[in-house]
Image (cartoon, rainbow, N blue to C red):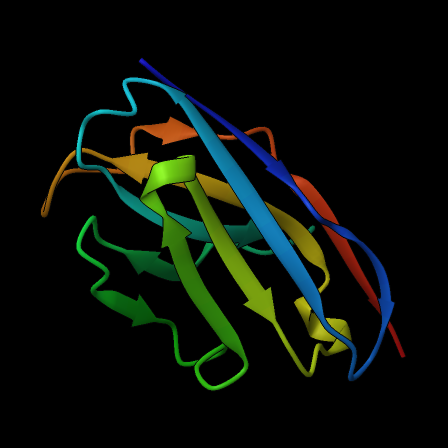
Length: 118
């Protein structure tokens, strides 16, 4: 089992920045790929980014160039630096983990709210 706890959400004005953190506990010795998703009211859950154990990354087009994912394996922590935030980025942001390529993200955090005001 892996437990994930996100933090760093909040209220920010358009154009501002936030950094989300996700701390993993439990089977942290496993080489999980970590991802970030978001879910806004009335919309489907949206993939944002993932980072592999060795640091390979992927981004959704909607956040490419504005968001940066990173991880500190020694701290069992993954980050999402979000710059130039827009009101449409308002959502609950979730951290997730999967055990390997092609596997589903089977572990999820409780989410952290990000609200961007115009």
